[in-house]
Image: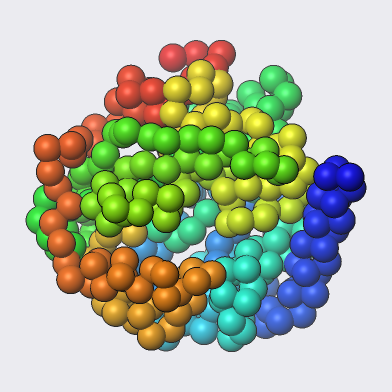
Length: 334
């Protein structure tokens, strides 16, 4: 019975995505340039101009050939910046982010239309994917290896990066790399379990858990994702990229300590604009299913606290993450 219900849930979510595509208004459609072997990046965003130059540069260096991006009624010029990028196809959508499963219906619409048969990185504009040897072995090498070993995707832990000083500050100027602007992270501890019936991993920990949810740990954010998948018409994301259907795809990643090949998402959420964004979210109420339950969190972020403490670790590179057990190498040579 559970398998039957999950099959219907998957079909329902795919149907939602197919309907959602009609809400996407093309701004710059360059999808005719996509080639069969291209690796794609799929993103939904709103007012992320501070992240976009570094985001595009990082994924271009990794080997992403084309970006499929939805701008959700942005007002900061992100659309103008993206519309002139030769490897970006851009859509605008003015509908509710929250009612679109926090933008997931739009992302899944693009994955269904353009992603089938491709390796696709479905990431936020403030997430930079890294993996063992990412600086010397681009994504085409990684995905070829995953194809050889029969692994249909790459799991990743989310690492919130933060500054030495209070939120609203950075350790380096805007043109510097993210890991210089926000050089610190929490290496642990982590709590994990499997949620039934989808068998999806539920990983919690990191700096937001430590600072903002110490008194309510079950409300702490989920810190695992499946950001890189070989996309098929049978798959659909359920809760951001934290979980996916069919359920077997959730089992490709067990979180920190998993020896199989995995990655990390360097999360630039705490760049200086986070204070203004938190004030805005208190009014927009678009980022949580129960906004009232998280109002205290947004107020705490908007107050600009200092996250750095004795637990903080300065980021030095992917080898450090492997040594901490935050990424696995599998049989991908070290």
